[in-house]
Image 1 (cartoon, helix red, strand yellow):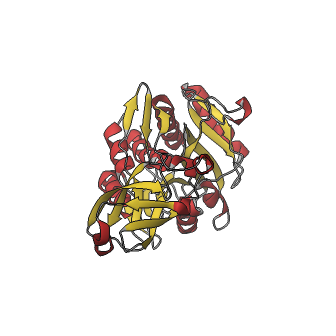
Image 2 (tube, rainbow, N blue to C red):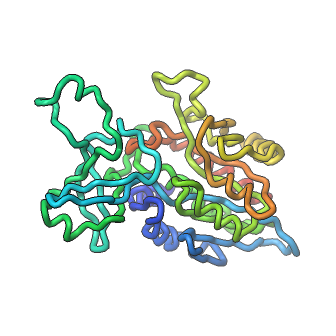
Length: 345
């Protein structure tokens, strides 16, 4: 497993509208794997691999892998140097206390800390300690005081500052949602090797998914795929305190074959086809449905005249936190099923 690539992808900052550094990293990795690469006006990276078998009208298969992570944009800097932010993506404020962050400016990255405004535990009241602050109440301290205004501008990107780690058979990092998909979009194509596939493969590394599948919509209209595969993380709530029916996926049981969320309903025949390949090749898998939320496959399904669509997902514990956790075997299973499908599509 190319863990070094996943580490570099996760640790490179890139919130919605600021995916350029992630895109540059991906471009450096994928150049030998594709016949064409373009960057669209939204900032998505569109990669095309021609069919390796002669065909007048090859099936267009599109993998959609969003590059952005949840994060913040600077909205205000006080005269004393405290930085206020607005979120880009969905945060649970309970997970934002006492976090180390990275503020990415035009002149480089600055380290800081994020905490809610208000009194510390020693001088706060019991009622104050029970309150969960809103995201707007959190501030960032860069330790620069008044000089902060000379270095930070409104609109600068803010991300969590945490390294990727391995624990047991798990991988933990911020931004596994959705650098997992970027990794799969690269490694599944690399796994094809010199196979003479009959389909025309498009891998779209999309932008601004976390704020409404925006990059996937424009990319899908440009490609007009016959088949769209949304590659993403999903919930793995196989943890204490969650009812069994809400687990979505379980770690170690393989990739998730995603059949429904609030943005799309998968093509029935495509679900059966991919499941049959997984059974034949003994690739562990589990069917998944998500009560709320969406992913880029929905944009491909609804683009132009429409496309058949499905999701390939990796169950992730503690999603939308700095402790997102995946199972190595589930990630490998996702890579293997994507490559296997493309070989015969």
